[in-house]
Length: 506
Image 1 (cartoon, rainbow, N blue to C red):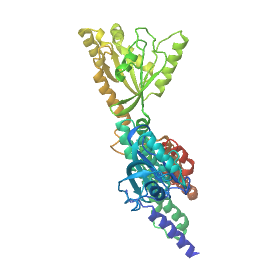
Image 2 (image 1 turned 90 degrees about the horizontal axis):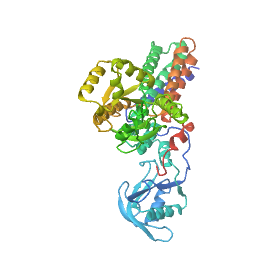
Image 3 (image 1 turned 180 degrees about the vertical axis):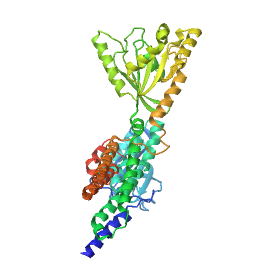
């Protein structure tokens, strides 16, 4: 009996020792029990972009990589030195016809992207050359074309990447702006995964302490204060996860794009402002009120931040059925907006100067932007003389509760540069600087699993005074939720979701 208890204690202590983070050096070999796709098969694909180009990269991964390299090159001296580019002719293995002359690279496993033996052919990027080499590879026994994301999936299953790094790689491939590239590169480097791994290690220690207390507290073989240590671990973790979740969705906005909506009354100049920002005629402009009846969207890169800019129908009472639908869609889009550009005609403000404050606040209240990011834009300043403009400037400046105000003329271009500067500043507030501070959440699934982790930690708090076994189960559930983010546990359920958006050859 005593021997069994000692053995169990050693097991618990072993779990503790195995899970102490080494801050950067820790790299688990396997994250889940899912067998590699097409185990035993060697896969190949074009890994560079399609279409005519100077150089194309064809990647091969699997146990037959060395065989296919020797079959397509017939190199007398054997395989090229590992990770060294060698210029050589590439021939059809059946006819012996030279297909191209290019660079060959050999990556013996496990020192490769996938952890398997890999080969790369850097050839000329003409469609005929690429097609001929892919056909030659397909003619070899044991080789087959890769499926979308299969190279990265093999890298994940070999322990080369965790799921957060895989997602960072996918985001890097699809990054269209400078800020997106920076965020994706940081996640691919493992910064986000390291945070979750550290939290997992903390939870593992807390669970080991709690289970040791459950098994050995009656024999008084456990040091005093063990439960206090567990409580401290859990409370610290709750604070860190809560802080991580309260990030105003900066990382998700940066990844998917900031929704900016231009809204205002009919004929205030919304479409003109959209065209000025896009620097092209993206929307129809006319002096007739109600020209825009649907949402006009365009994707832009503004100061390195991805923006989905929407021009909307003018807000007014109308009996026109189509325009009514346009107003309904405007209201719907305003609910979804991350940032609202509220546009007003300054001529109308001048005419209502005796009730200016009421007009401005009623307008913003109607847009429902009081608790959201907003820029108030006063357009058509070219229609006012200097005295009228100065009067309005002074009157607006007195109102302290207004959002940032920009004065401009879409017709002359006056004030557009200042507006764009303010817009960039607001976008940086919404998205943050991806290189500073703690890495941001980038995926909705991360947020979901972290909420479940907090709920499970709440179960521990609820049961710790009455039922230690249920309290321990709460910690186990929390640990499983963290593991599902990185793929350390339960990866079977999410693998397809992660890899399905990858392109062929990656």
